[in-house]
Figure 1 (cartoon, helix red, strand yellow):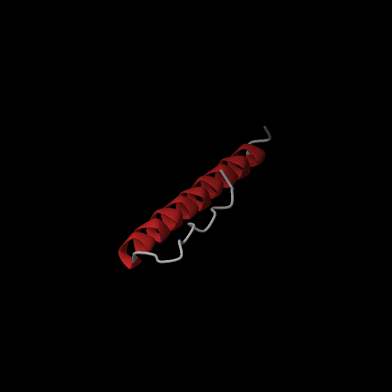
Figure 2 (cartoon, rainbow, N blue to C red):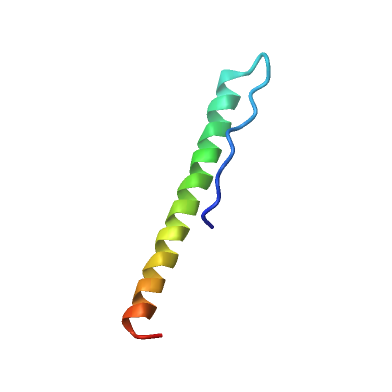
Length: 52
């Protein structure tokens, strides 16, 4: 869940399109982590409100 997403490794002579794709994947992973954390915290608040 709430984990850091590492920057993609960039070689000495990178292909710009590949780097863009790798960063897009990394951003997608980061956004998924944020969404999962947000959902987990919402569930925790709901359980707390019910006294569980």
